[in-house]
Image (cartoon, rainbow over all chains, first blue to last red; front, side, top):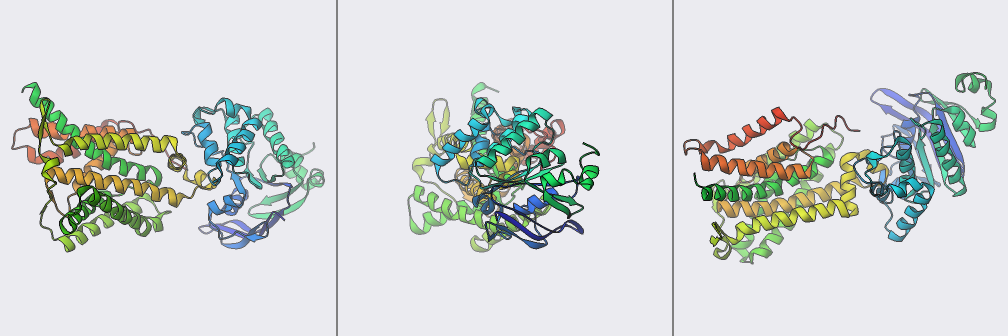
Length: 237
Length: 298
């Protein structure tokens, strides 16, 4: 098992954002975490990346308890997040953003190799390498955010709404990249509001509502589940 | 007023501005990353000067060695302050850390007073470097000239550090979005320590230049120059290094011009004039000369 979350609870002040959820992702899988705004999906990912304090529960990565590890130690183990809203460094150049992505690598040659790989995956980043990242379009910024996360040769990516604000064509491009990652043996946990797209490209999915997981299953089953269709897929398909 | 007099004042103002610039950069890099106004920064200058004095008087070591030892120890103090007074407040509001830094400043001044007394002590640099020589139309000592050179070298090195190195890029990344930097695996505490390391080291050098100028040291030596350097950083647009340097030169030159051109009855108010200047700049440009309105930050 790649990632296992057991009975995770996160509270902001008095409000319980994540209420005792459990989920797991197997090696090589793409798993989607689907749900409405405010369901606690982003908080779950932030807890995994050690950016919010957790109230109780346990997070294991490759059978190791990483619950109490600081954020940089999680990245070093190969679990990297592409945060919501991309959060690229707009004042740094594209190349410098990628450099930050490989920050935990001490092996310079490997960082170079990863940069070549990322630039091959997203040729636009090579073209714009010297430009400041703030000048990129929204789609290009998303490519950069994913490329940056790939710079440390992660074993697993956590993606928080990678399609947010993108046109359908760009969304398709991003999802194609995610499918490609599967070939590259990168495991993915994906948050999406766009449930249909998420279920299309994922192997399994968890449905999250007000801090709890209400449904889970294989995507081909969920796509035909009446409850999912009425609640998330806009009625009949 | 003749032109020579004016130029002499200008050269003197640029010298003071250089010292402020070195200190202002320390304020600015720490503020840029932590949004913390480290009022204890000026007191690191004072500590540095006292340590140089101790090494010179008790061990009779060459000035260069004294400065190096002092830098090493003062950097240690700077890092200790960060660890004890600021890191536990990493998630606190800016007001809280501001008050913590004022408390540290008061504490350091009082400790220095207990150890060295409140009396001014002479701080005399070797005659060979402190005696003015005729350089063109100006009278300058070696230490005066060193002030310009050291500032220029620091600025170039810092620019290269920020633009050309991985830790420099990490500092800029943390300054823009600390959360994203964490998600990339940047150890933010280490970046913060590095900023304090650079700031403290530069503060000691600034303290040396300043005390060499005043020929004296006392427990609050660095406090007011520290405040002025902070004004410089604010005037330039806090967080912007180019702004801090420009602000420092504006304030240094304005201060000396005020002193040189005003009647002697007025010159006692030179500090007040500097702060008034800051208020005036902020009324016209609330974000400073080069500051951008960043709005909130995530």
